[in-house]
Image 1 (tube, rainbow, N blue to C red):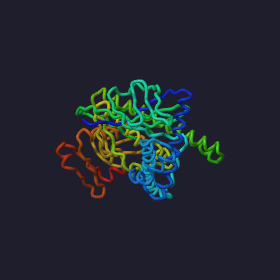
Image 2: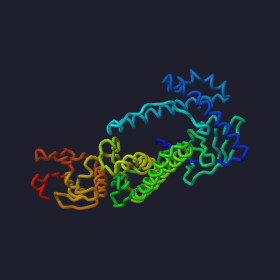
Image 3: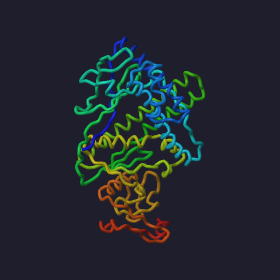
Image 4: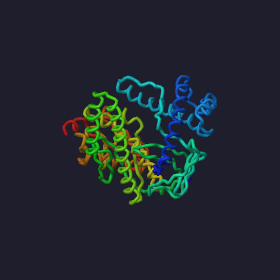
Length: 406
């Protein structure tokens, strides 16, 4: 049985004197990171070992950190550059498709009270208290944990973060997987713009409320960007954090409800493969910003890790033609979608909400795990896989004259 890693947020309770020690440690640690960053950037050295050989002695002697904290500071810089470089690569793929200027890697700087990375050598988590390294020695602090914090878990890494006037620990927790049962049916989940998610049961998670929030933050950003003062820039950073936390909370709520629906009926969950979704899907001009800004990958990640924790199997299938295929007769045709919200099959006349129809197709594909047959309008013929023939599926195509006259 494998293990699953997740991040749990724990709040620390510190006295004024203990807060002073934590702040001092943060400031020294991030000053060390800012000393390492220019060297890493100029030499394009982003490996832990390479930077340690180059800078370990200098950083430890200059900033008075312990041996392990020196290594952790260097690793933070190297890891930040690697993750930033990968993120820029992904962004440039989208920008290239949209014919927009590409981004390049710039030198990173670390805030005075930025996060500190700890491991088991410099931090230990007890039942009610945490022992944590500071410049003035180890201190023990009380902490609170959420109700879902696992009883059996291994702490792999912990980040100390100062946020909203309080200190928090972001603990990377490793828990054993719950072996999922093999389901006979699947709950299909379709992701979209008008509805963030729609299940094959007919449950929809509308984006109307989230769109109002996005527009409000968008208007506020526009005003602040035009102002351009230092206080306006601080305000911009704050609202960016609020919008990000709002998305995370929304995706947590949606994923939890989807998991509960599948777990309660002993079904698996079927998701469409989102790889390259921004490049391969097109939306109306007025919906482009909504399409590109919602964190669909994050929602899928939340569903997957919650499913592993609950013992629910997740099947990822190709989403090709799920919006054009009839969930009743399996007929595929672009004309089955007269508009964004509606589905009307040109072959059998089946009508349904387009998102629910797509979710049913996703569920059906996961259940039989077979490729879809795609009809060819040019030849007036039919392409059907052997797997589909074995399952007795019938895929037809209506003559062009019938399609045009419907």
